[in-house]
Image (cartoon, rainbow, N blue to C red):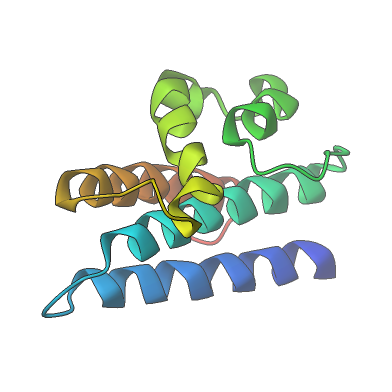
Length: 126
């Protein structure tokens, strides 16, 4: 793997670990879980694009990043709607007015898990 790809994966794994840890907390902060899972998915998609040599915009939009991968991640195509939902937490969850609950966090964790698993397989990491 390219060093840049490894850097993206390491950052994504940090977000994933903290999201899982927060999900197990006595009083989880749902917004934080949603934010971290969005960040994890974003960084894994960017890791994949980096490894493939596909240029990508500086964006938090997970659907845009998936689209950039073209047909190289077909297993994630059915997740477009969930990726759009998760993508909203990249910014909105960090500010007042947008609240996440347990259900949103569980959905976010599941979507990030799917992205993480798919990309890790493509990168030979699973």
